[in-house]
Image (cartoon, rainbow, N blue to C red; front, side, top):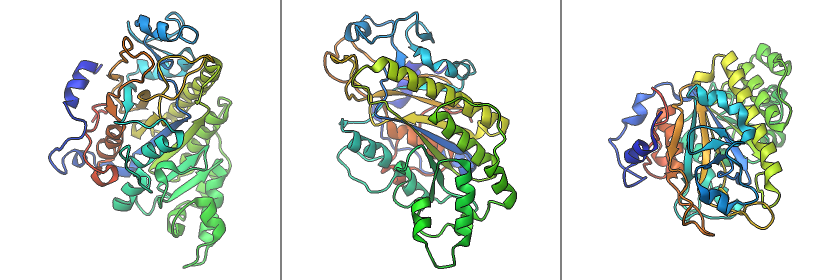
Length: 391
């Protein structure tokens, strides 16, 4: 397991660094054939009750009502454990395919839902305003193959987020959508762009050539998914839709799934327990589905949210908007373990937690180490990728 002390040492004094040009992305020739899955925890998940620092008495001092007892947590080591609803993630942890990034955030954080998620979606600095998603900038400069059915698909949301501003993105409610949209795209006359098509696909320009790669057999497969029993709930349904779409033969570079409801200002415990149960079971399902397709080793997924929650509980047995947070990274090539810095709660009082890892380092890991692309223009500079992936 990669030790946190070694991780912090490799990060050095600065998060934004210069390295030899064209080196890190030259080492990964697989490119967009490798799938990236983004899981948005909308509303701002509470990280301290997700990865529980039960060895810290200050955790229980700050959370006398909503703190989770050590004996209830899924213990990972002598200091921290997972929320009990995340049982579905334990096989990933035991297999060394789950990395936990502690203290993921950015300088000068914003506590507005709208502004902070905009920062994450555009990979901007806190006081910088950009109109395009970070993936849109990447795909414009370094396009996915035209044979791909789309740059990416968006599930459980109508908001394109990191694909906003011109990426070839498809909004899916079920796998049949992709087949229907492909037929609609192929029916468009050359040089025309129908309003319905534009609204359905949320794209700029004509994607007929991309959608045409879906053969009649692939469309039939999308319209008749064959998977067995799956967990209930909207998140699991979105995972199943993604799996069935991939099984249909559609090639995409990225998928984003949104799980909503994490803005837990009151009565947090039951709400977060339900949501984290959906997350854990859904990610376990995604692993099983992609292993069955032979794609798990070529899949990288990570969670993100606009912010975390404050360390101190509020008067409504909930938590208010905070800053740095813990997030999951998983996949067949992930080097599992704890990364970053366990929250230091002794002197936090009513304040917020400092960040240990800039979120753009995670994006740089996906762009450079995973896809083998240059991340500088997409991220507005050089950010050191994280050492969380196997060769």
